[in-house]
Length: 214
Image 1 (cartoon, rainbow, N blue to C red):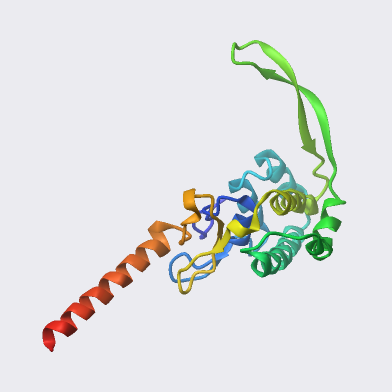
Image 2: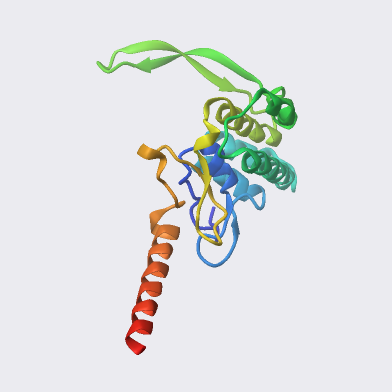
């Protein structure tokens, strides 16, 4: 299915933050990758949070407007979690933060995960058995469940002192700085990092020209 949206942005080194970055202004115009139901399903596929066959089936069986309503719920979840992260980035989470996670807890309680035994080829090409975890995708609203999983995993596993906002003046993107020395400053060197370099170059040229004209 065609879309006017560019490919989604996955630069945060944490899929939970990539979800927050699903609305951004990569060039000059704001883009919301989950602005409607089709966009939400497409973003989930790009993020590999829902199997393509599940998304295809749900697209075929949902009522008109149902996916759009679920996308609206996803946007509400996104903005609630954005505030949670922005209020706590740069410091470790504490036990007192748990009470603010009630919306996420309620979403997790709706999940229907289960395990089953499946065949899996081993490196020698011989069929073996393994335990595979999956979930029941009963309705369009089940598409919210993998979001609950990645957000809760992020809260429990990520050190929030490593969560940063891009230093680009107009940039809204967040990322987890897992670099050596925690020296990352930009969402991407190709976007805001390059803009900063160009701005610094223009400023140096301006200062040099001013000195020459004195």
